[in-house]
Amino acid sequence: RFEKVWLGAAILLIVGFIATIAYGSVGVGVGMVDDTGGQISAEEVQNGNTGTQFDDPGVVKEDGQYVVYVVARQFQFSPGTGDTPIRVPAGENVTFKVTSADVVHGFSVVETNINTMVIPGQVSEVSARFNEPGTYGLICHEYCGAAHHTMGGSVEVV
Ligand code: CUA
Image 1 (cartoon, rainbow, N blue to C red):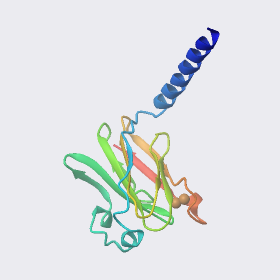
Image 2 (image 1 turned 90 degrees about the vertical axis):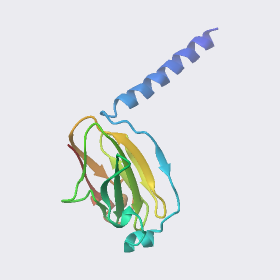
Image 3 (image 1 turned 120 degrees about the horizontal axis):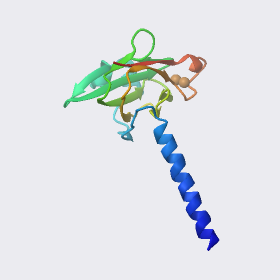
Image 4 (image 1 turned 180 degrees about the vertical axis):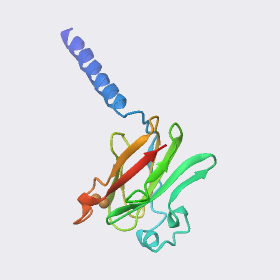
């Protein structure tokens, strides 16, 4: 009988932890993470001849939805790094599509639960909605070479 009570308490605790994590996402809801997989090669990305929007990465509107195409390479995000921040509107659904021009990278937006690996030859997809305007840090969280620790940028929500 007591086991059931403890089991119930444990489940409540777990639910509580999940709720805490969800609440901690600072107004960002992540819709899904999906690899569309193997349609473009890192070499094509590097040479800018994928025949896709990755040849001219940035924020575009597709069917009324904001889509951000980002190319990760040693050791920068295009756009994202330096004087080319990713600029997206608050309160709108935004889908990030990220691919790599060379090795495995990470794509993580600080203080949100936007967090995905970036794998050469694949497209990582994360949807989110920023409710709060502001500047969010962007970091690579997968070791990608000597200057991995310098690879970052920012997302400006306006
Ligand atoms: Cu790119 Cu670490």
